[in-house]
Amino acid sequence: MSGYKKAMEEAGLAMNDRYVRSVPREAIASALDELLSLPQPPTALLAANDLVLGEILKYANRHSITIPGQLSVIGIDDAEFARIYNPAITTIRQPAYEMGMQAAKIMLSLIEAQEAAVPITYRFPPALQQGQSVQAPPGTK
Image (cartoon, rainbow, N blue to C red; front, side, top):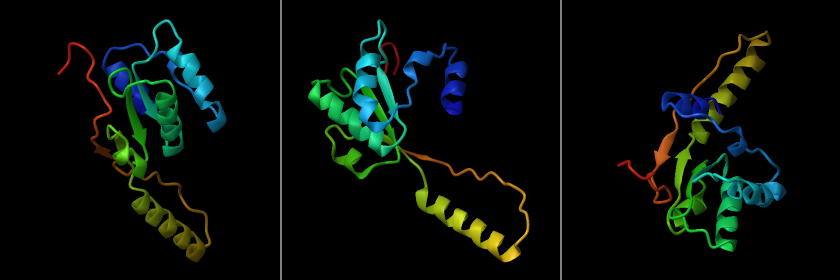
């Protein structure tokens, strides 16, 4: 969310809170109904994980929404099915293996040290897996 807000600010765009949703899996379809029924519906969706991405793609299929023609879609987690969807979905790959290894190292060091640890924030760079599910807005290259 902070990255989204920062990007909107840097682009000089106002953030529309009506576009931001966090709902249980079984409520995703109704949230999409609401979003796409707004007077100015979003032209793109960012799925926070592969479960949400799957629900968005099912919704698009059921409602004959073309990707990226009518709606651009990006997923986070680099779900395997994103590459076999037609068109291939653009995703943001998180280095899950590396994150897990670092978490295990931290846990082991805490067990061995048996003392209070100073909290450290680790950042792992994501990687963009380019698909064909994003259409550039009119007037851009």
